[in-house]
Structures are given as structure tokens and as C-alpha cells.
Image (cartoon, rainbow, N blue to C red):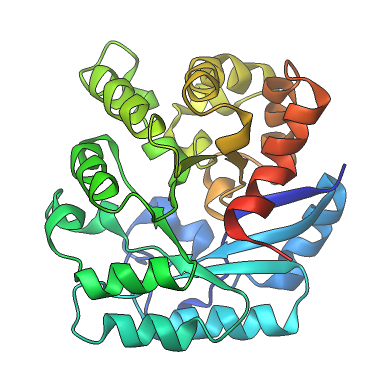
Length: 289
């Protein structure tokens, strides 16, 4: 079974548009270098991954154009989710221009980094969202639990727009399930899952775990089992997409270790359902060739 990685990044820090990738944050130091196609090819081959979806990591159209250029030159990149400021007057025309590239699949505002948790419910221009719908594009939601109420409002306002929730909305697993985030996360995410155009990525979760939960495959599986069980109940295999979040993943564990843990968690599914999470859902949701 050939797999699709539905969430992966490339970047070059020297480009200068990665505001979050700061040299004064010691824990980010391993990420302060180029990550490009030649770096991930051996990992993809080892993991049986035939195609990836490349996701923006900078709040600039220039970075999206950089990613689309990589996609033109590398067949392994099946699609690109880029960045557009949906509140700008020229957002619709920018989306239309980017959509001329066949591998441009959607947009992702970096909602988790914005100061207003309700930005998505009030700031985007309607003509920009209509352009996404008209052009058959998608909206990737990079959110944390506190953004879910506003995201729910946005999704209900635009029921024809396909929405993919990144990293299961980043549950605060290091704080434990008894913390107040857990009830709100579960309630709001299950409400979003009840809407038919909403999908969810099983990705970006190991970096939310305490370090002790990343010391072995068994520890990671045990820590993530409640998340996996909940997502499976709410979304089902037909609306779950597996992703690596490489290279951010490497802050917590290796590419191979995340695949091993995912194989354990998905192993309870029937083969056809496993195929959906590893491959079929991503191909359908992103319209990959």
C-alpha cells in the first residue's frame, strides 16, 4: 500500500519570512536549517510514502510561490497548501492567480499565531471565500482548542467549503486529560465533525506530548490512543488523513518512529479503512493526481 503524507513542510530560513522560526528560542534550534526534497526522500522511501502535501510555514505569498516552484520540479509533491491574507482587498485575485498552478490545493492562514482567537469568524472577505469555493480549493485550519468556537461559526457560514483541521486542533496533551482544555476540545471538535465537509489530520500530535511519551513506540501509542479513538468515532476513516508534520515532528521523535506508532494505532482498522487514512482520504480531499 503506497501512502500519502498529508502534511509536510520545506523551508529555507535565509528567505527571511518565517517569523516563528526564531534563533532566540533554543528549542527551535534543530529546525534552523534548510529542509528540502533531498532531505526527506530517504524517509519517504523507507516509509512507503509515494506523495506528500506541502503546507505553508510562512505568512507570505512569496513562500507559497517558492513551494509551488518546488512542486513543479518534484513529482513527490502532490499538492501545496499556501498562504493568503484573506482579509486583504486583493485576496480573491491572489487566490485566482495562485490557482493557475495545478498543484495549488488550498490556503492556510496561521490562525494559531494571530492575537484574536475569533479572527476566522469575522475578518476574511466574503469574496475571498467565494473564490476558494468557486475554484474547488480547500481551507486548512491551523488551530488550537481555543479557536474551535470561531472555526465552527466560520464553517457553518460556508458549508460548501472543504475544511481540513490540522493536527486534530492541537489538544494540550502535556497538560493531561483532567485539564480544562479537554472538555471544550472534545465538545467543539465533535460538533465540527458533524459537518460533512470537515476532515481532520492525524498529525502533529507527538509534539504536544510530554517527553516521556515519546521515548518508545509503545509509550506514544498509549498516550495517543484516547485521541485516536475520539477522532475515529467523530470523523471515521473516510475523513481522517495521516500526516507527518515533518520536520517539526523531529523536535519530539523520528519520522520512522511516528510511522511505527501510527501503524500500531491504525492496525485495529480493516485493511480498506487503513487505506483510507493512509492514502484514500488525502487523495480525495485534496484532489491529488
